[in-house]
Length: 341
Image (cartoon, rainbow, N blue to C red; front, side, top):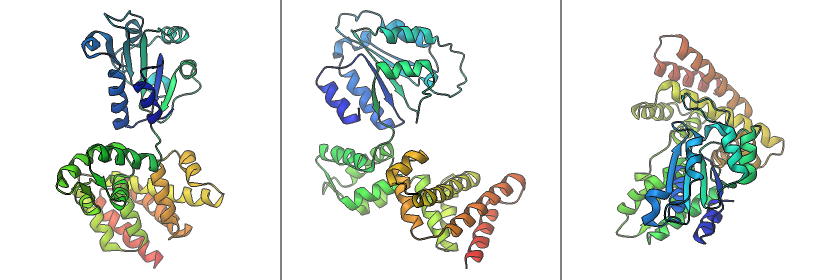
């Protein structure tokens, strides 16, 4: 089930007993949480809604709430946040979780309780008994890996609700600047609406002026600048990242990740992988794959490999010498461009 299908189901007033909301999309998670809350009448919410963070509270406490009879109402809502025990993660906490209690509940969920697990993770540990049991019983809603057209449609919908319009090139630019991250786009939308309140139309100029650029987008611009052998532009972007409080070792690490992705996309594409299968196989955001495919059309394998190796060497020096990280990066730029020249 996707976000739109879940919304329709909840609006109809016919919810299931157990849900698993899977994926790290804060905006959609908040929208879903609010939709579930609306199922409980306003006057009953204080007594019939419980929310539990599994890094602070045991699952048994949440289950005690789940098996309780609703207080002067028909339904009880129990929200379970960050159920890390469904993953392979190791979390520092003194809380003990008794999975037998959860397994017993999943065998016989309460008819009067809506239990919702919000799992902000890329994937769960499918080998675990409790994960298998939950997936077997729960209605699963995937919100982590939205396609680009789904993200754009959600933005258009929100803009339309505010009685505004957004130009297609402005929407495309917004996706580009935020790296296709829906939550970041929704966070920047109020600024755009306020700025364009007179015309009610969001254009590309407003997006360029007001939308925050993600670190990934700045690094993408830096990658292209390096590959195009533009030393001054490369250093300007690099210095801007430093001014925005990005650490040199962090910038270098993201650059390495980006060049690794470019190499992986280039190799897998030659083996017949489509854009969709690339995103799934490499477990990265589909928009990053789209940008990578655009980039590798302009450059060859040798260029990408030389840059990747050079950045790995630069990282090693950053960690093992006292030389200025900025100087080391500048030396990488000069050395790489000299080789490519």
